[in-house]
Length: 309
Ligand code: CP
Ligand code: NVA
Image (cartoon, rainbow, N blue to C red; front, side):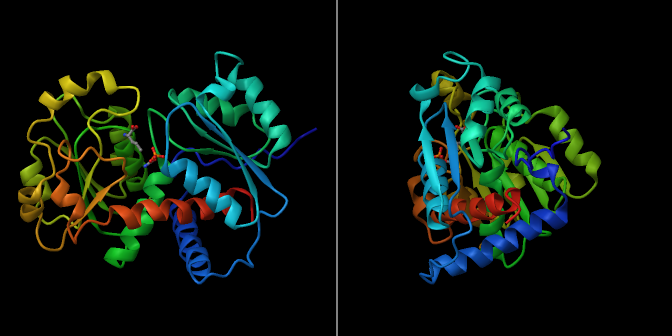
């Protein structure tokens, strides 16, 4: 029988601009409802989500679990030792079994292929909660935070300083559908994936620059963005990377170069004193905590969208 394939959320540019903006508008709506204390909106009543984690997490785990619960549903956390994806059992078997019990799956995994496999074999929507390649839920939350603090998303200048990692890939994929000015300032040899850069440029929607001088890059930025230099799975390279990334710390002087209009953003967790100073995280222009809070609201809207609610 021909079954309709579920709607997944794996990469931001799997969706068009209209849909992305619609999800963000929905996030604002449901956020204000939840913030008012209203708990009458229970679209996930009678539904469950299974969340597979092969990496550590605070924000992703708690924001998905609490968000799904607040809207009436039940969330199940499966930690690294529970399923042992690919070791105890193959991903394609896990996907088919879990999607038989649940209305939604979320995965935080190492290899990007694992989230693609989960989606391929699942009979229910799969949401990407971070892979080595990308982190779309984070950048949706960031876009929401930018709308709230900058008044708009389109046309803003975002300057990312650091490693060309999963966060950057999701920024590039957002820039492929929503017009922004996105600059990644990274050390030589730590550029984002070439094919992703080219695809984002080819989309012709945004101004995209990959550069190596953070001081020149940040001037006029509306948002300066930082992330760890050694991502999960690279922690043994921390010392080596610390040397390679010298000059890429976001400190008070760099924020001053950016200008008084610039906000500071970080997906967290942050290593204070490494990629960012304590003073910048604590400064009035830092919006890292509203950003973290928005994970829940952006994801609630993503879950509503993929469930067709
Ligand atoms: N930003 C983010 O994804 O945080 P966690 O790793 O704590 O989930
Ligand atoms: N680049 C970081 C993001 C953490 C939310 C990592 O992958 O560890």
